[in-house]
Image (tube, rainbow, N blue to C red; front, side):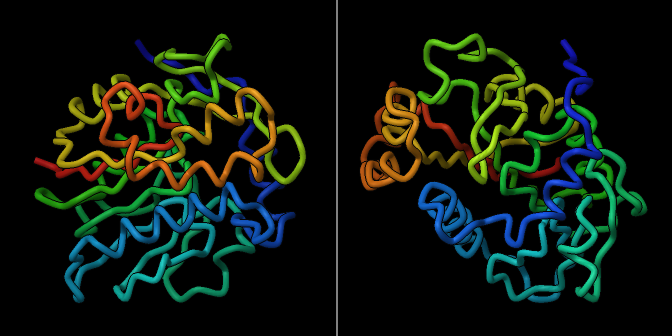
Length: 240
């Protein structure tokens, strides 16, 4: 089943991200932890030094990777200072087929998009045998326990970001897995974070108060019941 993004306005998202100084606010413990988890994960991947990497929805961040990187984002002022940068949606990338050796799409960029359209485009521009690193927020996360979004394949939710309501999609892993398979991707590994912190946030709605519980992620990501309820998932995929 396809879920169309007809209730999230790209113009609104663009204006919001152009208005903030940093997509990863330093005083926000929750999102600082998320960025650190993504950066640590990416640094463990042995990207070849001479590879061309597309950073889809980068917000101007290179996550410490020392590679040739092409940045794409809808917020012009976040990437216009970079050498290789294009202002575009990841649902409609301005690149030729099979141009990139590897693609990363992290920072929950997928949660603002039509997942089918975005993953199709990421596959289109990626060479065969190339890797895609995809991170997204899950509808199975404890944060959504007791809500209409909980465990749904795809659902729009309103979350708090920069102390204001923020609309986005959440997706189930099963739903994303089906789309990846349809676009010739094999999932090689799965990494999860924000587990008990999501449960605390569900009860108290305070991200900074919930973040200290992330210290237990290293334990609970190995316990199937808790692992399935992580708020964030990073997938390492290979294009067949």
